[in-house]
Image (tube, rainbow, N blue to C red; front, side, top):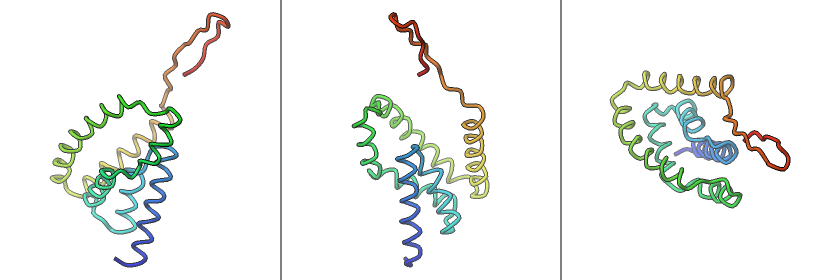
Length: 140
């Protein structure tokens, strides 16, 4: 592995780690496109590598910080993880059968749809909390 490849991989990891800790993204939004465009990985190689990174406890320090601040619901973590395990099995079986260009386009469309929804259509759920003393409501 060349020195420039090692530097690119370390920078991709740093960017993914920073964004993961900052806004909860990294694998799909940073690692996959970076591996495809900077290191000429196929879409399948990039997605498989990203999943391989997720399997290791790479986010443990970020998780610890959020846990200390009381921002992790371990019941949700457990349920989503169980679904993730099953989904990853079937999704990867399907992905390995789809042509690379089709998979790359589907990935790009998913990112565009997600970005548009977050930018223009994301409505926060509001929960009215009435305090008997103040009779005020808060947005949660």
